[in-house]
Amino acid sequence: MRIKDILSPESMIMELKAKNKEDAIKEMADLEVATGIVNDEDAFIKSIWDRENESTTGIGGGIAMPHARNKSINKARVLFAKSKEGIDYNSLDGQPVHLFFMITAPAGFLGGIAAGFIAGYLMVGLKKLFAKLPHSVEGMKPMLFYPILGLLLIAAIMFYIINPIFSGINFAITHFLNGMGTGNLVLLTTILAGMMSIDMGGPFNKAAYVFASGAFANDPHSATAAILMAAVMVGGMVPPFATAIGTTFFKNKYTLEERRAGVSNWVLGFSFSFITEGAIPFAAADPGRVIPSCIIGSAVGGALVGLWHVGVPAPHGGLWVSPLAGNIGGPSHILFYFLATIIGSVVAGLVMSFWKKNVKDDPNE
Image 1 (cartoon, rainbow, N blue to C red):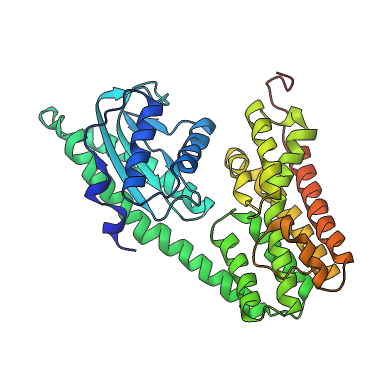
Image 2 (tube, rainbow, N blue to C red; image 1 turned 135 degrees about the vertical axis):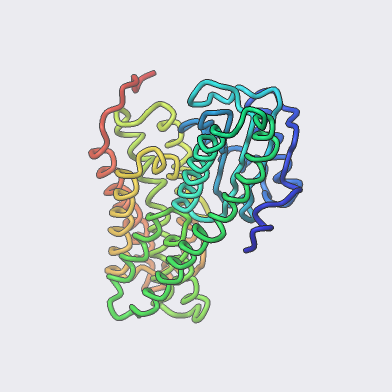
């Protein structure tokens, strides 16, 4: 990836037409689609709003850093937009936003969070630095300094720091898994399934899936490869199911918004793609409890897959490919596939919910 791939004149809006937050996000999203950065505008906008609903990305001082990460994003890009009049963006300081830096990153969940925090604090630092400039150049800040220097520094950080770090992590993890072999199958399935929940779509998640799918592609008739595929599928289904279980049976531990999101996670858990990302809003709001809980539950499910030799000879499909589990070791393995998923999800849901503190809002509202 080159810096010019992240920064591009085509991804700049020098005068936003939008007058409110909703229209501003839509206008910037329109450009992301038009330039080929985003392939599904509705999904992308939903991700932006999911992040905004957790806490505003209006960091103050007239700056907002809306960002998203999901499968609708084709490649990393920093879009710059400027509003002369300013837009009410529910910023932390209550002031209107004039400068927008929309960050799109196909990197994983943790990488996206890191990039977002770094970019935000970078802009805060630039504002403090430029505050010492003479008043005569005040008008140049929003027109020149913030968009050009800000975008350049953000792109440099993503290119020279974020991408190399997470690429190196991905390589190291894959090398580690390749070195393990399949001698201790239960340990391997435990690790693979647990990795699916570490960053929910990031380097750990992708390395686990690529390792299992690579083994399956190398020998589609291998019983071991089918077991590895089952492990990553179970590991990927645990986070959405765990959050769905928690929000359904422990309502006093989750906000009204989280309980509503938990309903959709039932669907995501059963989905064709075992969409781990359904748990990302929960992990972003409370990473210290949600992520470890999901890792524990996924690891338990993966261990059971290895112990019971549950195999699924398919590279994708979640619970929808459960009938194929009967092709490895007999029809009874269909039941074991379900049991591994259920037990892992219940463990994660219980650990997460008992660990979390009660919320202040009324669970019956």
